[in-house]
Every structure is written in structure tokens, then in C-alpha cells.
Length: 402
Image 1 (spheres, rainbow, N blue to C red):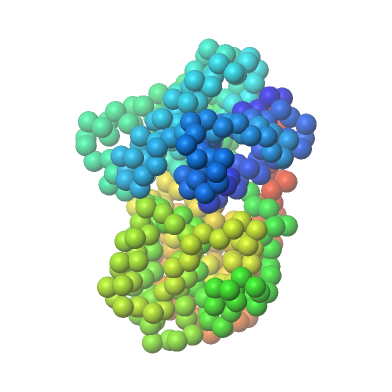
Image 2 (image 1 turned 135 degrees about the vertical axis):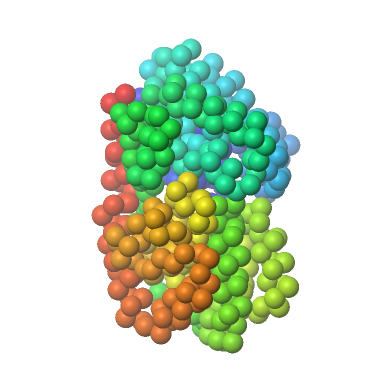
């Protein structure tokens, strides 16, 4: 099969989406498929080959990567413009699509749905609309989209996209219910969770080169690792409040690993509170990720209450694979809480209950056996439900069935 994977971000970008899409492309190419990734040029253009370009084509791991320029910027308007520019590039690339080709679109941005519809109607392509976050709901709940007219237009646009799309894989049952409530026929929806490479992310000793380099090996480390997003910012602000409550415990260190549009705000809050028990760490090289996560004692999965049904952090399955206990900061009815409770990989606390979060951290600190049990449970659950080969095999079979 000829398979075109459309994703806004791809390696060497940081974050779960670039890693997942690289693994999907590599897996499908290894199965003999003709794979092409349509993406953007990296935002952090540290390599000369990416500088001052509008387009670059590369071949790696048996597949082609087409990179198009788009703007960068932290503001919501800049992001909307970037999404729209990328979508226009993907529409332009439709001329390369032929009848029967598989077109995989990772959403957001929701605008990519237009590319899928055009590829299907004009070229006879078989389209999969992979929903990773629910938009425009997430933008509305985050306060980015406030104008009533814009909200009505965005919701109508979303309904039009779903109505004209044939196959819609979503990552959770909660997402499925959201789409069904919007009138999407159940027959269109396939629930396929995000996967994790359980051979790459695995239980490792805390005493390792990365923990020593970052001075984490002698602390009880409560770690958030990932992009600091709109869907988790309030949670992370509350985590800073927890750090303030526990500042007298010299053993506990809160490590915030990653970048994002709200990182500066978090750093300002830590500075205002004069906290010495919070350490900000930039994204680390992908090859160091297993050792970075192993440097933690507890891994935080934050998800703001009003966005709990609109996003499922990919980091949850990644963290479970490491054999470390998970502390979920999410609404009790969220998909995140459901997985944590079902797997018994940790505890989940409502993110607005700062005192309860602090108590959960202290309880985990005081019980090595409890941490070990949670970690073992999480690892077993990840191997059973999220192992890369199992999930990607489901995707390949779905593509073959179209």
C-alpha cells in the first residue's frame, strides 16, 4: 500500500507526537509499504539543512519525509496561522496522491480534515482521521476561542469534517462518546489507543548517568516530563502550589522537564514563591528518555478538570512502561483516571485538591513497597494494552480493510 502520514510535528521535534508518528512510519515501512510523511520543518532549526528553507525532502528508515515551512510562535493566533499554512501545504500535496492510496491524518489541527475530504473526493484516496485532541472543544475550554460567532462557526466546521470523513480512529472510549454525542455514526469510529515501545521505555535503575548529570539521583523526584500545554497548565500551576506546601522537606524535588507556551508562566510563579525545590529541565535527547524517566520516583500526568474528556496524554502509557508509579492529576471521571484505576499503576487526585496531592506524594515517598507495586502493575498493563507491535498491527489491519 502507498500510505501518506500527515502530522504537524515529526522528529527531530520533541514530544510524543513526533515519536509516535516516526514509529508508525517505520513500522509500516518495515512491513513493505510505500510510506511518505508530510510534515513541517522543525521549529528549532539547529541543523543547517533545515535553515532558510520552504521545502525539504528526506529519506530515512525506508520512508520519505516531506517537510514544508510554516510560521512559529507561542501565541494562539500564531498557532492557528501555523495550522492553516500547514493545511494549505498538505492540500497542495494532494496532486501526488493516487486512487486507493491511504491518507492518515493526525488531528489536530482540525483543518487537516479538509485535506482528507479533498483527497477522498478528488483522488479516491482512503482516509483515516486520527483524533488525538478534541477541537474546537479544547480551544473553547482553554479560553482561546471566546467569540460566540467564531465558536458557532468552529462547531459547524467540526460537524462538516466528521460528516464527510469515513474512518475516524480515536484514542479512547471518552473520545468515541464525544463524537457520538455530536452525531457521528458509531460505525465510523474505531477506538485504538496510543502505543508505547516497551522495549525502549522500560524499568531502569535510578542511579544512572542522566540522573547524575541532572543532579537527581539523591532526591525523591516528582517529575513532569512533556510539553507544557494549555490542557495541563492549571494542573502544573497547582503542582507548584504543592511544591510550596512541601518546601520544608529537603528530600523532595519537583522536576519539570520540557518546553511549551506556558513554561515562562510557571517559572515566574516559582520565582515569585522563591522555591528551591522546583527544577526546570529542557527537553533531553530521545535516546536519554528512558534514563530520564528512570531518574524519577513518581511521574505526574496532569490534565485540567475542564479538559479531562477532551485529551488523553500519551505520556500516561509511556510512564507506565517505565515501571514508575503514576500520580494522575485529573477529574475522577476522566479517561486518565479510568486507566490509572483500572491498571492500579498509581493514584489519581483532582487537580484542584492541592492538600490531597501533597498527601499522595508524601504517602508514596514513605512507602517503597507501594511504589514498587504500582510500578509493576503499570508495566504489566502497558505490555498488555499499549505494546507498540500490538497496536500498530491493529492500525495496519484497519488500513488494509478500507
